[in-house]
Length: 256
Image (cartoon, rainbow, N blue to C red; front, side):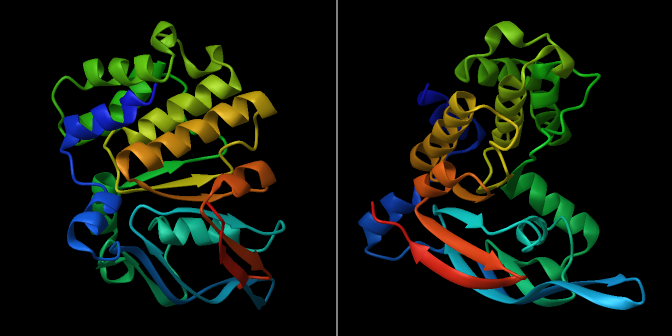
């Protein structure tokens, strides 16, 4: 099972893992994300609602970070800004050296297609496409040859080869989330964002998703940034950033 991450990475163009680079050249990992004084506000009933306020932190390449906090603390808003799905009111986000706010919408979309994977809590699979076709979509958009073959290979590696021709409605919640994860990783992203990836799953299925995320981080060196209420999932990360009322109130590394 662990092979599926590294093999797909090699198919899409391998790169040395951050750990390998650090060992070989005695350097600290490069920064995948640099967040500076990030603020996001919305007009609401004649007043301004500030969801995030002056959020700043950095995330190294290859990190596994959980963003936690109570409902309404700004976690999902922050994740969308980090992935370039939304734009901030003030402040900036650098993703792998590119300042998202300086890019056009088309350029941000291109950057996401090349470097970003995103897993939604509600799966966001296309209901009229099969599991294999859903995974093939990002590959086809990039003009990858044999996208359908690659998609079926990914399904085999996550244990769903026999579900390749099933529509999302014919899959369980855990199966849909595994398909969504495979789709997010189809282009071998440098960074993967996940919004409550275990939120709709039972504990056993949620644990399987956590294992897949850990393998993705460990085997391919992909940076993982996820939002979660799941304390078990958060404890498996290497670092926890805690939000409250739109601000960072705690940021700590976890013991190995």
